[in-house]
Each structure stands twice: as C-alpha cells, then as structure tokens.
Amino acid sequence: MPHVSHQKHSLTAQQTGEIKKPEDIPEGDFRHFFPRFQGAAFYENLKLVSEVEKIAKRKGVTAGQIGLAWIQAISAREGMPVIIPIPGASTDKRVTENSAAKDVKLSAEDMDEIDGILKAFVPSGGRYPKGHGRI
Image (cartoon, rainbow, N blue to C red; front, side, top):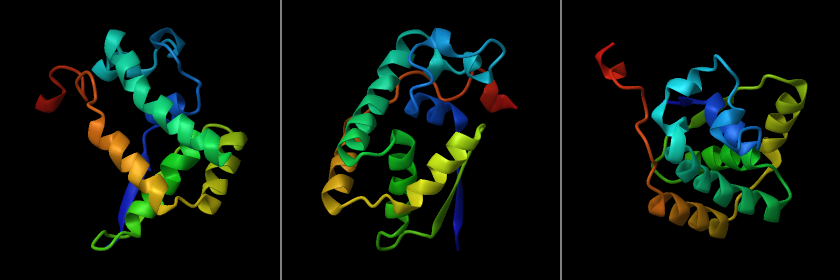
C-alpha cells in the first residue's frame, strides 16, 4: 500500500535557506507557535539543515532536492512501502526545483551518511505547541 508523504513547508523553508533565524519567519506565520522554531531550539535544529546542505552542495543540487531524493531512496529499501512525496511549493521556481529532484540519485554511501546524521541528531524543542495534543 503506497504511503503519501507531505513535505512540511516549515522544513522546506529552512532547507532552501529562506529562514536562517527565527526573525526570518514572516509575521503571522504558524511556525511562531511551534517550539522547534523558537529561540535556541531553532538554531539546534538548523544544524540538521546544515548537514543536508553539505551533501547537496557536494552533489550540485539543493537541500530540498536531497530531502525528496531521500524519500525516494527510503521507499526503494527492502520491506519499505512505496512512499510518494508531495512537496509544497509557493513559487514556480520551487515547482521546477522539486520536479528536478526526480533526477537526483543518492548512492549507498550517501544514504549511509544521511542515516548517520539522522541517528546522531536529536530534535530540539517540542514538535507541537503546548496543549496541541489535547485537540
């Protein structure tokens, strides 16, 4: 059974470099309410983006494309379901960028590197605003 994976805009904005500090988040944006985008937690979580950006630079692609390629590569692993990524895009440029991700191939070494990064990374701040779980 295929699994549809929506790529959160908040992660994409960090991956594309649009948001490098909490003050870059536009006024009225929902991310102001999420602990992972506040204060010191924001900068801790940005370290993951920095690691992905290193891989992207080495491969000559964007960090967002690495994220989409990673989803495709995970889907190809033995025992994994078919995962269909649905990335968000607010501009024509992002649609083009996301579409080009289909041509980004991650090697076994790339996947090992990403697996190591993810294994060592501990997200900072809560995933949801306080009290959100009671809704």
